[in-house]
Amino acid sequence: MSTIIALNSNISTMLAWANDLPGEATVISVGSPELPMAHSDVVLAEGVPAESVAAGLAEHVDTSAFILVPATPAGRVVAGAIAAKAGLPVVTGAKGVREGNVLAARFGGIVEEEIAAPAVVLVSGGAPLEGEVVAGQPLAVDTVDLRVSATESSETKSVNLGAAKKIVAVGRGFKNKDDLQLAFDLAGKMGAEVACSRPIAEGNNWLARDRYVGVSGQHVTPDLYLAVGISGQIQHTAGMNEAKTVVVVNSDKNAPYVEQADYAIVGDLYSVLPALTEAL
Image (cartoon, rainbow, N blue to C red; front, side, top):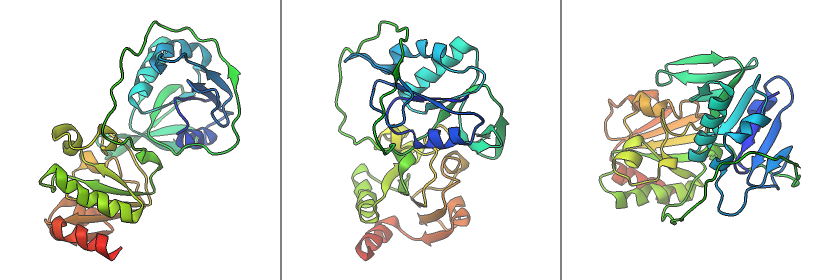
């Protein structure tokens, strides 16, 4: 029986995967007693982070099956603690479920590995659950003494790329941070979210890391993925290679992305993006 560890309501992907795995799924909601479809919950006191119950959750999961945990910073702590306590491996790069096993991308997405239970699996993204609120059975979980000592608001908007149906992704073809507004303007017209390649998030620090798509970043499956100023190296494409339609804007006709895409516009993004925005 698989277990879903929910740190917020964005668990639609984990729930879909659990439905394709053998047996029923149990949802353990951490921090919120009002998650739709929750079977059990752990209510945290104000100022106490989810990481404080990470190791204690190991006592309430089925260690003979899959344990699905969100691939967020807090989720990785929870996954590591459960895995260490239960003596299980942590699976990264998970792509989906096939015949009762979990599929994971390996070597930058060149191959897939089929992993059998038991294991702790980090799952990227998912839309918020909708429906009637169901209070779960409260769980008494051992905690460690962790407290939030301070909070600092970020100027950047948090984004859930896992739930996005349309994505505009930006790369090093943009010369300045302010120029990214061209992508945000286009995304606004499309009803899309803005994502990025790794250098934009971790090299230039122009966008938050939760917008980074790639091997060690977010894995997304939108209906439309528009990549702008990104060459298309496997370190990036491994994070979006299951998008239904891929459109590329690049000034280099020999860029790997141009050949891989369903549609490619070879041109200067500083001319192409405003034209697309105006057309929309």
